[in-house]
Length: 130
Image (tube, rainbow, N blue to C red; front, side, top):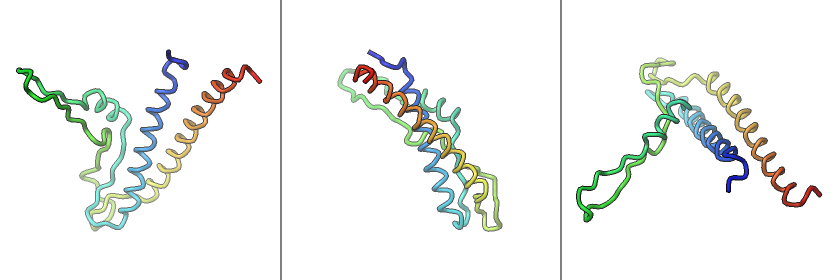
């Protein structure tokens, strides 16, 4: 039985995206002084397309063959390969990273607020409106 019609799972996917983006931004900020480090970013469209094709299954021609799946570990993350922001080859723009972090934090907090609202509604129904 699906209580919210898939809303919770959609919010969960949004939170997974925001969490991965936050980790990527934090990694970029941590490597701001690393020579030849290329800044990384997360694309929701790329993450969605990678999720659709992330699992690769083996074709079994005999029932004695092992079943296995290969899954991509971090879908949607890509690097800016040809972008050098500094003379040492580093591609991290600190101002852009901080702005992106602030934007992602607002997005994440909005999703958390929505999930909390859904659970409060469920709690209210369970208690019978009291």
